[in-house]
Every structure is written in C-alpha cells, then in structure tokens.
Length: 136
Image (cartoon, rainbow, N blue to C red; front, side, top):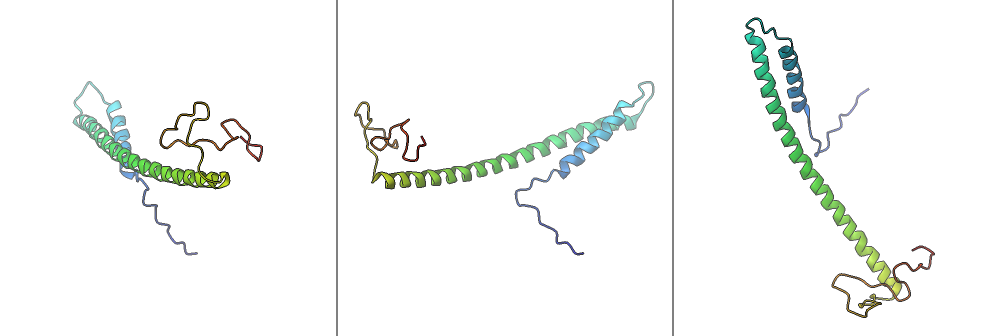
C-alpha cells in the first residue's frame, strides 16, 4: 500500500532543535550529577560546559519559537476581528432593514444626540424589551 505524505502546515513550529538541546542537556546534567569530587574528571567538567551551552541554545530556540507563535496569534486574532466586524455589519444591516431604516439618533431618556458610532434601539424595543420572537 502506497501512502502519500501530507505536507506540514505552513505555520507548524518545529521543536526538533529544541528537543535536541534538551536531550543534550539531560545527558550532560546526568554526567555532572555523578561526578567524583575526590579526583580530577575533565570530561565531567566538560559535561557541565555542555549543559550550560545546551541551556543557552534551548533558551534561544524558545525565544525564536515564542516570536513565531506570537506572530501567528496576532494574525489569527486579526482575522477573527475582521470576521467579527463583518458579522456585526451584517447584523446591523439586517436590523436596520427590519426596523425600516436607521435607528433613532437620540438618547430615549434624555433626548440628547447619541455619540458617533453608537446606535439607538428601534422605538418600543429598548434595552431589555422582548423582541418579536420572545427573545431579548
């Protein structure tokens, strides 16, 4: 049976290098943990150096991964905001069409003009009033 490999998504963040650094760190720390302080062990001291270098490399990889993830999150949030704006525009247009046009532009309690970008409620349907379908 022949399988076709599925290419990874373009936003996939590969953690392979980070795993390599963490694996190297684990081995180096184990070597360091079993040192014998009563004799010279240059290879164990070298393992400590490797552990520090692995930590530095892992931190660099984490910083790089974090940067990519934050960029992806921002792009995703921007796309979600655009979808919300579109849905709100559609809802406003549908409500205006059902109400026969624009909503009143003054505060029903004070009669003062509403601020720009704020919509009033259709007459008889203020906040808290039930709609035709029985929902609020």
